[in-house]
Image 1 (cartoon, one colour):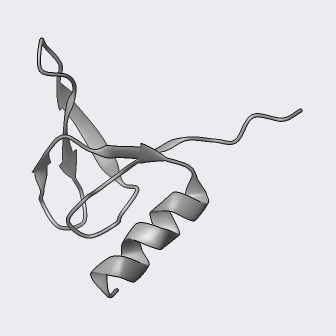
Image 2 (tube, rainbow, N blue to C red):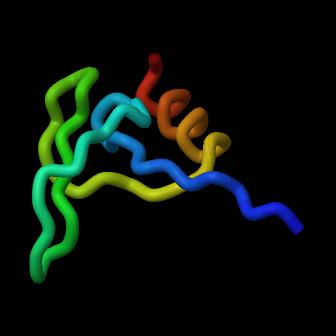
Length: 58
């Protein structure tokens, strides 16, 4: 069985273009290249990323 590719998804805009900033006790921090959001990203597959974008309204 093939494992699905996982993405870090921006909780602000739904983009999967997240860049890792730093990690520590509180977890990894990311910056969205699309909207500039900085913080904890959501983890999920491509279908999840589409779902997030749909709920945001993009």
